[in-house]
Image (cartoon, rainbow, N blue to C red; front, side, top):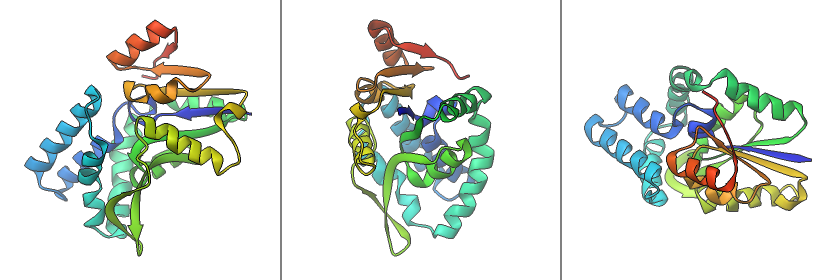
Length: 220
């Protein structure tokens, strides 16, 4: 059995689903434009430079989920998926996922973006398995807090190992494991698989990929 792991934002998508969800809420008037938009942009820049405090960011990003009903959130997400996400999916990205699935590999999207935002996106790609940051729920509503380890940097390895353990497996059990990512934030995970692939990489990951002789591809 082979394992294929796909980062989502700026890898399978030609953009960032977390950032775009925030911008969608701004445009819908769900959140206050000036303050929220500025914070959303600042956190995104911190992510790109590697200085993001994930818990501080999640306190910001998960708050709107707690302030609205699941029914409202679901209606908004359907529009967000159609207008913001589907246009960011290239034919090459769909073909890459399809190729691994048709080869009989175990495929999973692994992303730091929360599962409310990303579960419908994984379905759009036809990927059954999603490893994502989990927002806490109580009595059917989001609380605004995170449940368990955020799926970010070293936390991606933690969450991957938990996911595999629940299936009675470990990463070394696979004959081959591939991970696709665009970001230097995913170096801990890329270093652990047998085939790390840099996809339209940021500058720091591109430099590491050249130094280590990793494959580099573009899906755009």
